[in-house]
Amino acid sequence: MTNDEAFVVTIDGPSGSGKGSLALQVARELDFHLLDSGAIYRLLALKSIRQNADLDQENEVIAVLDDFDIDFEPGDELPVPFLDGQDVSAELRQETMGEAASRVARHAGVRRCLLDLQRSFFQPPGLVADGRDMGTVVFPEARFKFFLNASIEIRAQRRYKQLINMGLSASIPQLQADIAERDERDQSRSTSPLRPAEDALVVDSSLLDLTQVTELVLSHIRENR
Ligand code: C5P
Image 1 (cartoon, helix red, strand yellow):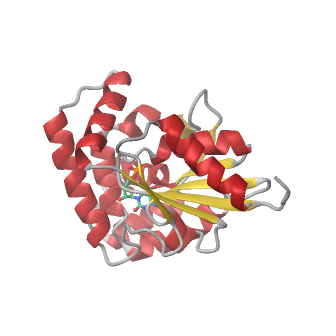
Image 2 (cartoon, protein in one colour; image 1 turned 180 degrees about the vertical axis):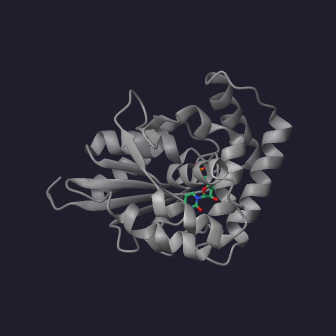
């Protein structure tokens, strides 16, 4: 590796494609910062629910941003999300919060308000950012862009294992229906819909495990850095 200049790696993809785990591994290997942008939308959804804001009303969600006190502290695995000084990781990972996040994330004004916050995560030596629009909107100049996909059946199975490992209950048919609904909402919204950036490398992880996908992504970065 010869180029020491800071750069951004974006990893976008639908729910359950494995982008969160991949982003964590890649950030560790490169010793880069990590942005889990989905966690920001989930934190905003949680705060909106706590304040009884209507998630479908853009102005009500934007008003919640007036006093949006969030933080990420280093954890054993992923950074630990805090809202108003409280660790909210368990609440954030619930499927219902993913659904609520996709409702607040539909509003163009909300997305605009969150741009600077997301971009502030880019600090030396570099950033790995995962989400839906990292390569298309938030970091269009990123040096490396990946779009991770997997079949809906595989994504539902992965989500099921994650939830069970966290001690939460889940059903595969229900998860599959929830994921399909969230995909539809994320792909059809007019602002920043979920789609690969034109210059993204699209990776189908259906038949690959995390080690294989991580190796594929790191080799691409090492060869082209
Ligand atoms: O990635 P995660 O499942 O935590 O994201 C929750 C929801 O937040 C997504 O379904 C999507 O609607 C929204 N989101 C987004 N843009 C991002 C990250 C997440 O719209 N960059």
